Image (cartoon, rainbow, N blue to C red; front, top):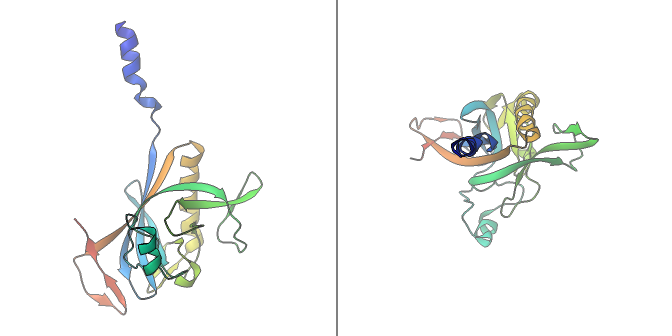
Length: 191
């Protein structure tokens, strides 16, 4: 009987790991939001999104829709599920051909939004609510997006193929250095 109990106690290995992506939104302009993407607590790349309009996933749908400007608003801060699925996006934004279909990482469900993806792009006009990845950042833009997305997508696919849960959390981080560079404002982590 003791050996059976020890066997049951050691079933922790059956628990699947969860990959955690975190977007720390740091630089805010009237056009865009620049942030940093961390995977399991390790910096991966810079991010570019539409303008942060102070939306939270805890808000009611009508509150989100009142503040949201279609195609020009970052998704509400909160935690969402990440999937890998077929996309109907026509231009090449970093899709991978998997089992005969073009696929991208998706973020869902996002209240008040549909079709949110992680993909390539360099300017705020390329995002329409989606998360863009880059290896460098500037005011309202990121660079080397395809290289950054390839690295992120590779890591997501490893977790996805192992059937691990994958989540992404968007947070606003406030920086103690309040100096401004042109129209970019730095802000610091909320404790």
